[in-house]
Length: 71
Image (cartoon, rainbow, N blue to C red; front, top):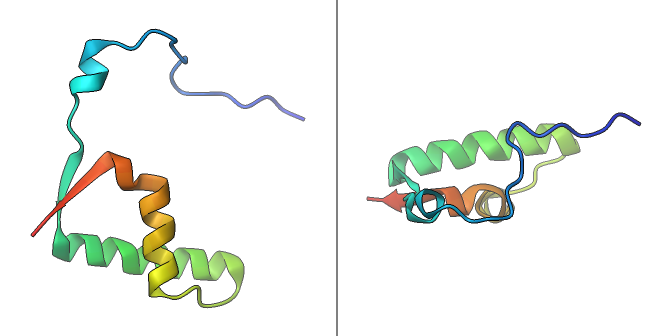
């Protein structure tokens, strides 16, 4: 088994600039496009239609902390 390589070393001390960084803002229409693409990709991986609701839940679980959605 090959070891997993991380791009950034993990730091135990929390830097203030990391805590103050605000999430990336995306528009609602872009969010819908992103979810449709995510739904398609995950459906292809699983070989079945995962559905829109599951795609939203999965995407928010994976990436939700990194973005803020605005209308």
